[in-house]
Image (cartoon, rainbow, N blue to C red):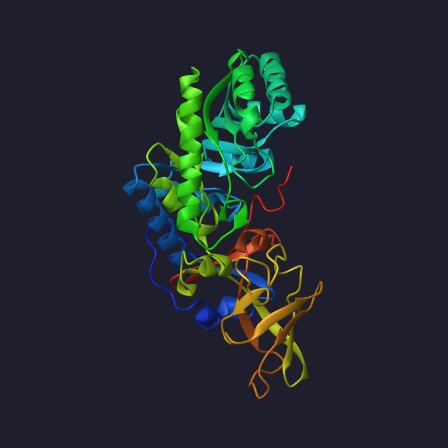
Length: 389
């Protein structure tokens, strides 16, 4: 169809598993393919925007989940202040498509990447992350070379133990940045996710509140030392709304909420009916009464959220909509093995729709996605897919 998808004018569509029946294009589309329900997507976008507004904080969603400028535009349409990227290449794609307020929430330490980020500042507001004196020194050197003042935020490790300044290093790094004439420290940020006291947790309310309180204390400490900390940026999809309720938090950066996934359902932040993305697969073999083989394996579903790992203890790699009791228990490269109750009615050639455990890294396996809105289905590129440099 040539009908345009209209941002902000979505109508109800049927359940994800029925879309192939409604849309002839999908009925003949080759599997496995990624399917996105835009009505659910907009509903999710609107709900998070309302939660941020009600708490008086800015919403700067992470594009890692969708990697599509058109979805970013939907988020801005609903009140997002800007977007968040992890890599310069993602930011470049977004600027090319008119997204002009981007936080690269990642330490930039390669001179070529710093120069690319600085090149974007002539067309957009670009903020970059920093988490060390060494990293700040590189940013200062390149910014001086380019004769610009670069807006930066200091990343804080609040327990996830990846990038981010540890407690003892926060003040020395901030003081070093303060003496860099080409760097402007505007705020602090963290990503902790559903973590509490160093462990994964289902108590996302306590986790979010603790994250917010920790970051506000650090911001106050830095302000007392004379640093102008305006932005206190926190929050993942499961914890963001709870962190947003902490006085002093100014911004949240959730990503997965835009499509939701099985992981978020288990965290209790959404229902299966809120999941806007699924993978369509075809049954290619029924070798045993209790086994179905589909044409989607590890090249169709992300494997970073493994089954039977705490705190979620998910069974299998996704929720099979046509057979909720079945388990997608094993993935090889091109085969998905589903264990199902003997006596099932599925046969070779049938199509199944599976909500992945983790939609973000699943989407990054596809060059294109089918976007569905009302009576319109279009196959569109995922412009920033694979942009990891």
